[in-house]
Image (tube, rainbow, N blue to C red; front, side, top):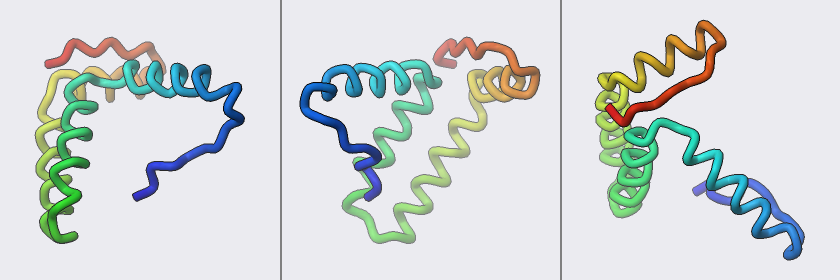
Length: 85
């Protein structure tokens, strides 16, 4: 599934975990929620249905205010401010 993206020493686990959680929290909340939902719903689906589900969620994300503002901020190299809309 590609969920393992790094291996750390046990002594660094909490620091690395907190950094990863903060990285996720810095993203658009609607996109994070839809990604979580799609991952869990898609696990039990055949590949083609899972791909359609992912495309559906992407379309939903793309229609949000956060997507538009986030894209504009990225292009202008400004800080993103997500509103959950």
